[in-house]
Image (cartoon, rainbow, N blue to C red):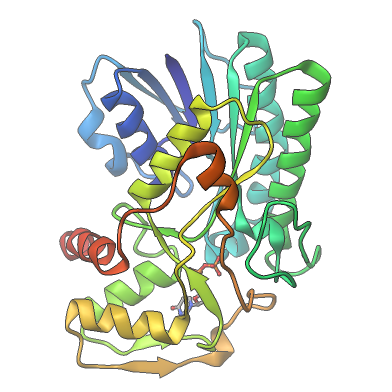
Length: 310
Ligand code: UDP
């Protein structure tokens, strides 16, 4: 296959590029580098099966040659980033998705949308199944991301139903691993960097829950979903749920940080979901997929990466 990965220089896009190349495919990675970084794909320079194109997908996308699949992963993805780039976040979910779908239609390529657990908002149903329609504050600070992704899902289904484009939608739950940006403000890079510096971990609130999956588990789920013929959304995430305070304790233990934690409740962004856990029944049944990497094992690998970056 020849695949286009938008956001190809980002955390997930770069890991996907690695996986598709390892499977013998050809990869075109596209990125405007507002949150992506060429460092993430520097090891692929010179690979004849890999091409990087610096382009903003919210503008018209031109690409010569055949394409078999488009994986649309371009988007700011951390709360700090979408507070900093609210308009770009909305544009890449709306215009970027439209352009990528238009290209898929023109090239007769499969289209794969990176959606998110954020479409469930601050969920009133727990754990979250794919048929739960969500609880999103449209005008809250996270609304720019949540609504962009909800629109992207609607547009994807419209292209599937109206134009017959062969589409996939993955709803990604909290994912961590090497190549996350140190300064993206998410809990994993924040805590790991603080622990490595032997500083107290900044816990905002603490009783809210998340369920963390290691990046290689996500990539496997995405690869299987693309190969399937399933068009409805599929949750891919690790159901192992814990409070942020518990998570902080695990990070401190893995890194060996004696500094403990500090509560900074005023830093918590309005609308921060109180609970989040994927129901992965659908992924189990349709893709025969489930996460394999244990939290401490994934954290070790992530810590090694951040040790080098710091
Ligand atoms: N959080 C925290 N300390 C930090 C960064 C984040 O306690 O230094 C909390 C944040 O308020 C949220 C959770 O950790 O409840 C996960 O935040 P993240 O930004 O990683 O992603 P989210 O799941 O909210 O999209």
